[in-house]
Image 1 (cartoon, rainbow, N blue to C red):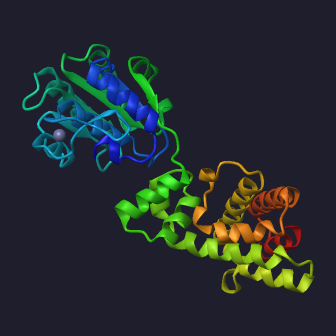
Image 2 (image 1 turned 180 degrees about the horizontal axis):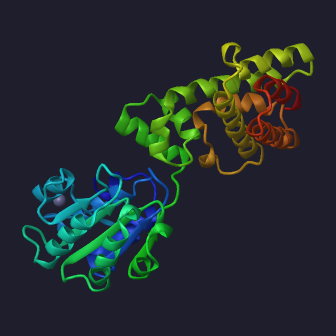
Image 3 (image 1 turned 90 degrees about the vertical axis):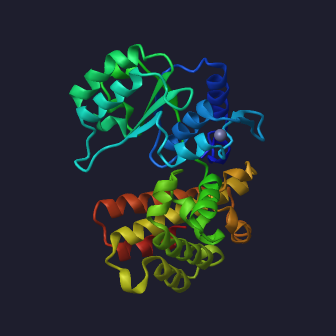
Length: 334
Ligand SMILES: [Zn+2]
């Protein structure tokens, strides 16, 4: 997948592409950043760009692979002779034989492309002797070879490995970027995509893990907020608490925690609207009509107090408080 199709990280990807085309990109790189934000895809895009038969200029003016030539397609299918992707075996670790093979292959001139690229995914899983075996190659890679170590936990790599590589940091994606990827590549509806994105912590991987539960959690969070917004009547607030605890699931601590985090996410968005901050920061942008209705009942102070109350409720749950009591308490506090 060329750079243009990767969500987020625009500035980083533009700089990387420009440096790759100029030939000034260091040959030993670490792509560091949270799981599920597109680091491995960026490494593949880089391998495509340096081997593409007809590179293009992307909409943002940065150079990019065409994604369509034989080389780009072979790299995407992982059958290009010069682009090797190494990942943990079933044991969960990357063995010394895998690393030796990569070192041996990197020593030869590229076979069909211009540049050999060795991508090591989950590089923190390389066993220690193999990391040591890699040091000399990282220090002085053979001409026309490049190594990209992809990892969410760079600190688990040996310091000697880290010091020989240039580290590029990938941040979290915005909720809007996560939602866009879910709709484009995973056939999510708009509602499901935004709900999943709002609790994904900026990771497509995390969003994909928990969609159905998250959609339910957001519905519950919304009924709570709408239920308590305009009323101080205790009975109506207790009714609203039921939407949070869910009649059948009083004992399900994880479920309540998910719903509370969703209440937090909506309250944070409410804060963004109330303070007139940049609306692109909204995690639940598709729920703007609801958020605007809530604005009539919540001012900045109330939103802040509610946010703090949800935070306290989540810690109480952690400390084993009864889910029902926590849900009722929240309904009276916000
Ligand atoms: Zn191409």
